Image 1 (cartoon, rainbow over the protein chains, first blue to last red):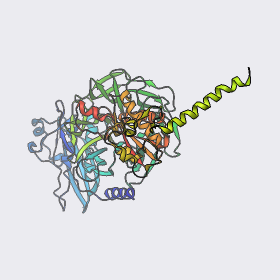
Image 2: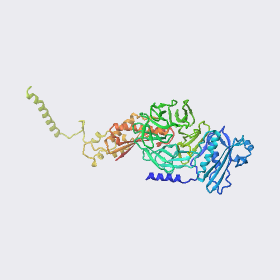
Image 3: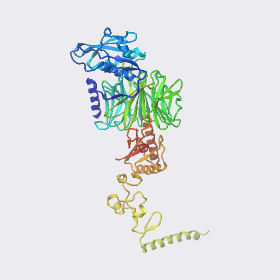
Image 4: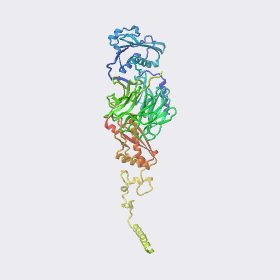
Length: 432
Length: 199
């Protein structure tokens, strides 16, 4: 009965268009030197019958700022207010030190049904780089703004933007309601929605490659069990509830398999589960701890943590089984691998003299680079374009999320007043 | 060898036995302990007490319905044992070094007592909850907590507890006993807790 209530709550939340309320606060904590200056002018909404509930230009400016590649001009300093390219006096923007300019307007087809137009202009060359028109409704205005950010980012950098994506994470609440909540939110912290609430721990969320489902571990039966939950309908099924551990689910890139950890046959080992047939295949058979499996981006191998050599290190094994090969040799503690989408890098938790930092391992050169300078970091997760890393860190008494660009330059912090947040996972590109 | 030679020693032993028995019946009564050392009639509790039941007095033990009337007094039932606030059975947590599931010899001794208790009381089940400190990754810590719980489970089973009496669960770093970020807090979080149920 309790489970039925949980489902219902989740499905009501998904069906109702939410007011844009930030659940996570964002604070930029890392510098933007060397970032390209861009001015995003407020979009023209003068022709609308009602005030637009969302400030599109503000969302775009914030998104671009968080990338560390672009630096949006303060709105108060904008020298002019053009909405169309033929209204732009380029000299003015060059004097203001801007390389790029974004102008836009929102037109109404009928109440709540819009058309958004925007143009990205090159200030120095004095010409349009990109112009788009997109339909929108009240409920997807924020998403459209993130898509505009993605278009602009890709046009300037050549890399696909990841602003119109979502993150999942677990919040441990101290005071109100259930103790643990699994949530999904936009990358700017807005539109946080509950996937599962429980008085017992929730862990290890993992996105399906199509972004429509989450696998996770729930202790709601007082033991760890793995579930797969379809986000839109809140329908879920238990896929592993064996004796002992059921943990660390990780979806294969083709969506057909879940790698997971079971200890039913002795000690924690890596298995793969065919999600359609429910057939289990055992990949490791060792009395050591084998855990935290992640698939390589081509789906042919699995990287995992094992302490078979005495302390936890990262290993690689063929997805069909075979002898695991050790990858990490620097430091006594290397765990929690996250694969970059291009397959070139592995992010991990690297323990060095009692401090636990996020590090990046380049597979080809075997070079290890430490990316953070804090001491209780965990759960690194790559953005789907491979340009940013999301991770959790304890500062003082509480847990926060941080995002850092992989060159280490840009950094921002996501916090939640309602409690500790941990175990972030960055979702895939939206398929549409 | 004549028959008379064989018979004689047996007859002597028999006579001796009769003699001893008749002697005993005419002398003051002894309460005889298993090892044969006679004990004064007042001292029952002293002889039974092996340290694990300190504080329980003779009248309490022999009163009521526990009696099959043995001269040593009735044993405590499972609930009473579990309700003790001192002694080995009252210790319900064992601790571990960083990144280790190895039991200290003190822990093993404590757990052997627990194992014997579980083995002797079929209606008792115990849930072993394994934990880790917060450092490092969560899933590795779940596996570490599981391994610690398995270490404890092995000791209990070795003492005779049956597999369906012992359940193990790991909470990893998810349920710390102490939430500070200090060495002391961490040492108190690296633990296995024994949670008993009498069915």
